[in-house]
Image 1 (cartoon, helix red, strand yellow):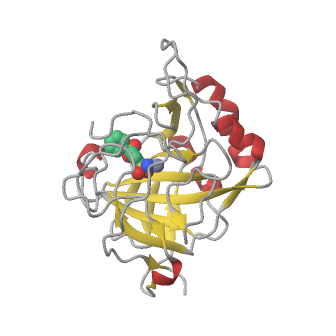
Image 2 (cartoon, protein in one colour):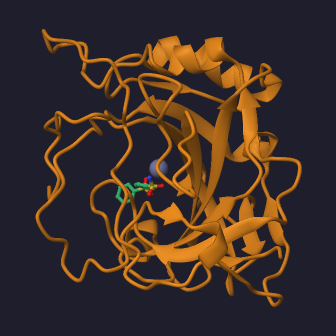
Amino acid sequence: TACSSKYVLSHMHPMWQEPLAIPGGDRQSPIDIVVRKSLFDPHLKPLVPAYDPQTCQQIWNNGYSFLVEYDDTTDKSTLKGGPLEDQFRLCQFHFHWGESNAWGSEHTVDRKLFPAELHIVHWNAEKYDLFEEAVMEENGLAVIGVFLKIGKRHEGLQKLVDALPAVRHKDSMVDFERFNPACLLPSNINDYWTYHGSLTTPPLTEAVTWIVMKQHIEVSHDQLAVFRSLLFTSAEEEVQKGMVNNFRVQQPLRGRPIRSSFS
Ligand SMILES: NS(=O)(=O)c1ccc(S(=O)(=O)c2ccccc2)s1
Ligand SMILES: [Zn+2]
């Protein structure tokens, strides 16, 4: 793939070697959100996530992060409103985090780094028949980003944390049921920034309407420590590598507007 999984030895050693050039790559993610350069857009609507926890299927380690995957063959779990013109289907959520609480998020706000970031991934099932199609289209995906801070224990997250030891190695998977990702959203989901960008892991396609929440959620130090107990490597590999710093380096804004739903 464009980005091999080699380590880049740098201060924050993100996970992989950056490709030299992405075809047409002037809408890459993540970015730094410069608050004073974002533009309040009064036409942005409230976001309407409607998730059915019964569509939750499994949790697995794909060697980049751990993902909780949902049945996206029906419109039972959807996202609409906000900057979106169509109705999108929930397909998975995952996180990015650091080896220390000093960094780990992919997006930053006025250069402020958070210890981790949640991504809830949806695809445009109104315009496309398959996820694989949507991934290649500019209005194909919508990802909600939520920053995590270290603080009080997140009760909703604990069910997920308790399942992580079962998916310690790359390619391990276990059933996971009745988890509603809405419990991971901040209390105020009406304050967000939105811009057009890309996937932050291969294939890095510029298919994403990003919706980054202004309000963070809190998780405990111990909960985030369990994320760091996961491994990038499969059980067979002799050298085990801890799954940390699985974030991409920030990308140039290239003049893109960042709109805010709040003034
Ligand atoms: N970090 S991120 O939210 O930008 C992201 C990266 C990859 C995905 S994907 O799982 O949708 C996907 C998409 C295409 C191929 C494989 C996985 S979402
Ligand atoms: Zn992500």
